Amino acid sequence: MAATDSWVDPDGVRAPAGEVHAWLRGTNQTLCGVPTKRAGLARFSHVEWADVQPATGRDADRVTSVCRRCLAATGHRRDSKPWTRTDPRP
Image (cartoon, rainbow, N blue to C red):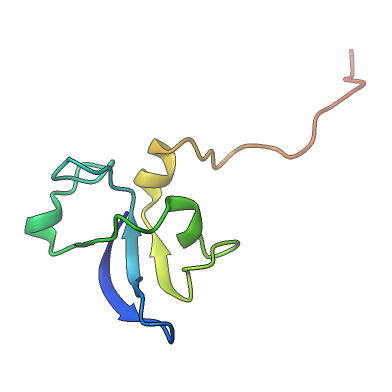
């Protein structure tokens, strides 16, 4: 993953901060198409995408936003419903 900023946690590990994007190793752009070098994004190959999600991630202390296009590219659906209708109307 890549981020617009970074910080060092108390254990001395560099962690992402600011806006985060999904990034695959070996590529020069994020999943949404933003070039990492031109956008000034710092790469974090030691941090997983699930760890920077603000709701559940362990490395999301200073993450301010998550790229919506990268979320969509990783399979996250905005309109997914946590329930199913068992007896629909005729």
